[in-house]
Length: 109
Length: 113
Image (tube, rainbow over all chains, first blue to last red; front, side):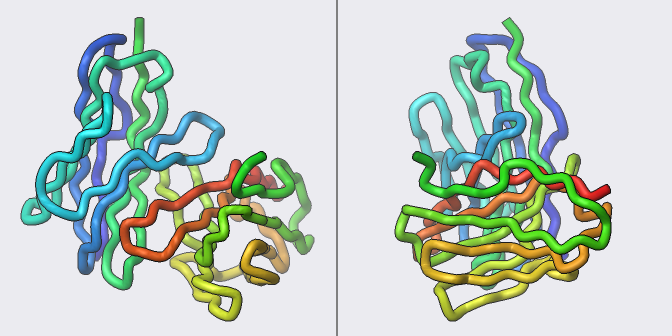
């Protein structure tokens, strides 16, 4: 079957670092996307990993281990505007994108 | 102007009514998608289209139909709305290529009473 597991909620302090984990099981694998979604708004693309390792993009980095079915999103120097939901979305067989329920991150001063 | 535009932004309708949600894009992408989002659940794919003559069912297509009127337009219809179709609906587009991300419209909040 296909399954995505990520924490429902996390809290962190402004200026800190937070890691949002995602484990997945898919039939086939063609990469993994992370999206950010502010409340009531559309998801926006953050990162894409298809090979094992870390992809860094400014304050955000994403890691993938295909053998472990595991990814994480690392957010550094947290800002209040980073309060949002973060959606893990692996692409399975037939290039079908599957979304997790998302992790709601609250950043406090 | 938004690259992916959905209309209406909000809609309240009664059980049994037929309604249409519309999506247009200026990104020039061939691929278009309709998703619904419910609290506590991930985005779920309703229908997708890889070009004007291609329509495919997603994981939850029952009770929905779509029309791809042009490369830039993809509409979603609820033939006879029911309360459990109350949700936030998103249209999205993507370029070809496995690493191409989805670009979402601002969503339509639909309430069926």
